[in-house]
Amino acid sequence: MDFAKLAEERYSVRKFTDQAVEKEALESILRAGRIAPTAANRQPQRILVVNDAEGMEKLGKCTKYKFGQTAAFIVCADESAAWVRSFDGDNSGAVDAAIVTAHMMLQAADLGLGTTWIGNFDPAKVAVEFNLPDGVKPVAILPLGHPAADAEKSPKHFDKLPPEQVVFYGSFPPA
Image (cartoon, rainbow, N blue to C red; front, side, top):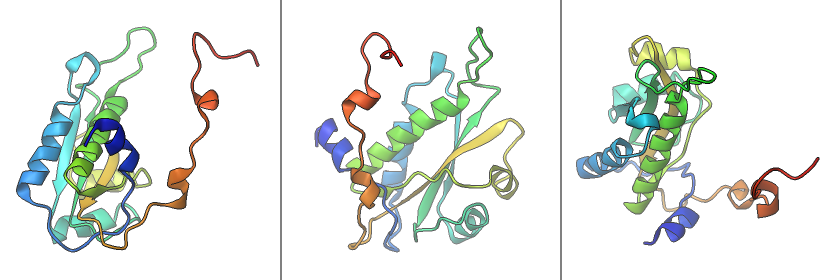
């Protein structure tokens, strides 16, 4: 599949089968995350693989969003390993983790698997439940699995702003 087609056809899957995700698929998705670009190639991403009942139970304590997935990734940023912009001290860890997550989502889609990005979770509970070290910040929870036959795109999936509202050449137009 070419990239544009993959990007257009990928959607947030919110209903999965109970079929386990194969180890080879997990490794392929993790590789896509590992090779994703990060600021100054510092690679501050730290990825937890959750693929057993105990882990799913712990994950359920951290977010109300559950879709019957058999696996999930918790993508974190080690802020002490991330590049920091000298001008304002901005830490790139969360942005790097977001780039990694996007690569993983697209690789999963290319393998015929589904994902959805969960941003609505309690980071303190994630830290406790999964024993995150200080300075390692959870950025995204990424449920992963085989899409159910009746999984559908959210109606909001098709709501895209027109290009003239999101793309500007040279500078923003005058207010």
